[in-house]
Image (cartoon, rainbow, N blue to C red; front, side):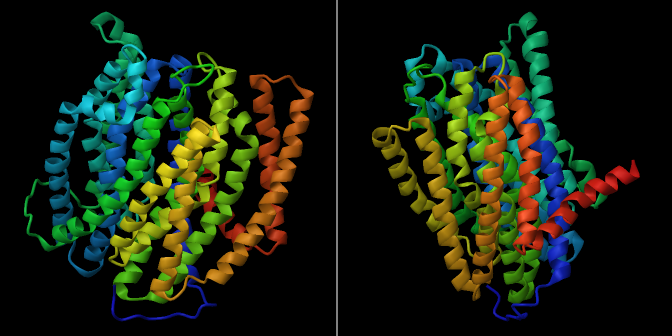
Length: 553
């Protein structure tokens, strides 16, 4: 932690800094919106083509294994450790030194993650056993999941390099291109996967689901290569370098150690819940269904999480890293407090909206083809329990990087490890005692997110001398009031639409077309009436880039 601390008045927030963060967040948010929409389209295609089947669940598990390690190495520990160090290099050293550090990290990724991918492909049967032992209950399902894992494991190396490229661009205040990169993954993985699996696959002996798995690897390659022109434009080009004694690389690795352990807790929780889900016997679907329902529900919760939590967290990290490096704790506190307030302003109404309109949302997006009404109902149930923890998850996207910016990676690690016990206790009790089945696993995920947020918030508040907690608590109370007004309006409008039409796909779409704009309008005017002036800053920041694009076109 810096030893020299400057201070700013608590009631005099750095407005230019705050608006700069919001502008950056809005750019990321629009790009993430494109990513999440294409991701939903990809999920929708999968569910309609394969339904809640053994094939799809084997694919989801095979994709989840490299995806878990992606969160662990790439978008979790690596990004949080790399961006503060690289930002400091850009601010205090020459661009050549910063470029050298970027090349050292990229080379280390190729060596370490590449080796890990090779081991993962060899040990695929053991990994599938760890996450999906219940797959043995369905003939051929376990073996298919092993094949899926082996095909998709190289995706990890590609996305790790893409995450490092994203870190370089974000540190240079380039947010749009890296945030859009996952859109190319979604489009590429679906397009190439369908072309291989459904187009040429039948002629060369490749099954449809295997073709979709190959598409994932091609999509990961597109996610990386899309960012390379922007890196070149900024003067960064890759050269393979190895110097394990370099002070910057050593510093990143030291931060990554505890960060990996902290993120490992999240992945262990996912592994535990996946294993629980693989053994749940549904009265209608048998052993095929729970993993699909949880995956689809969590995918949809990632829309507001990405739009608001990830976008604001990504825009906040370079700013608080510079504040911490300069020893300006006043600006650091203000930025963190304002970012948390904005996260709550956007995610609390989102979580309530997902709870009230969950069935209409899931039905409108996923239902059709092999995905039936029953699947919609079970997925919506999981979504409602995931929504409880949405604000906690989003707030962690701001809090965890704040600890890393202060050079503290141990605190998130310890809290993450403690969450393993909490997750196991809640998940097992919900399944065995609560009778909630797969929805109990969603509830345990939310419980862990809220626990981690509360503890990290209290520790950070004490560490930096406050985060303007009273003002933040008052703001949350007003947000809840406005959100409840919105919820009542949305519930009534949804009830009215459903009472006028039979429960069909068209009725669900009509419900959303009426309830979402009405709910948004009620929330906006309720927030303004309650004195939440931040709502106007958010509206200007998030609509400004879109308005400028329309004017240029």
